[in-house]
Amino acid sequence: MKVKRTEQIYIGENETISKLCHISKNLYNQTNYVLKQQFIKKEKLSSYEDLVKLFQTPSENDEENNYQKLPAQTAQWTIRKVREAWSSFFKALKEWKKHPEKFTEMPKPPKYKDKHGEFLLIFTNQQCKIEEGILKFPKIMNLEVETRLNDVDLREVRIIPQGVGYIIEIVYMKEIEDIAKGEPHRIMGIDIGLRNIVTIGDSISREGIAVKGGVLKSINQYYNKENAKLKSINDRQNKDKRLTKRQKRLLVKRNRKIKDIMHKLSKAI
Image (tube, rainbow, N blue to C red; front, side, top):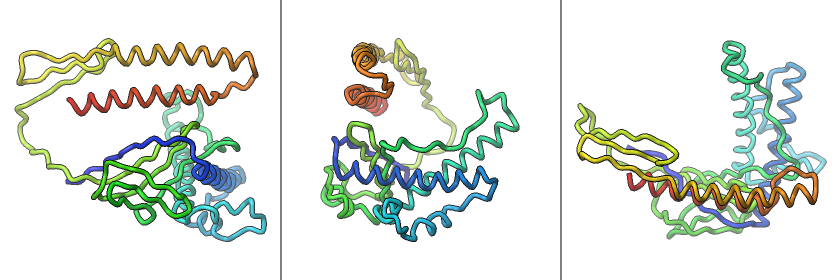
């Protein structure tokens, strides 16, 4: 059977990607504005197809032509993400009306993205391809990235802004062996914890396995210590409570270290 797999590749700051992610954010906010106005006026919200038709028509004001400044399929994915966010909002609102005790407050409509921020870019397998271990993007990107993948069933590629660089996610399908069905004879139990990341017991060996969480604890302690220093400096210098670039770099580095450890651990298990 085939299962979905994702490879993540981190790259540093890139002017072209930053520009396109900024345009994607503008298109997100444009789409969100249309839907929010319809919601306020209690009108029926435009479908994904209607929204695409709306933004496919160029405006006399070039600043509004964000759809035209992105590859068509990428722009359509940005619009789709906004529409999905509104569908999730209505679903949550419906659930809140039935079971308000499940929520801390009434669900709110999707917010606008920071005007200085960026939004993700999604490319289909018609836009990207992998040749001899190189991931190739559309010409507008002027970007090629090395990957350990080669002959795979590529589905899509996502570029996710991190504030200080980007994560490229390569989504593909992988063929794996079907799990034999029947009465299980080999059983494993896994307990997730803090002092021990995992404690494992199974029906085969007589001894359990415990993986200590000291490394993760050390990474978090270092992050908390350094972040507190940077926050203190930022608080003294200005009133902006947003993370500084140095804080973002520290956070990204910490998250990547933890993810690497957890991936290696899960593979070993």
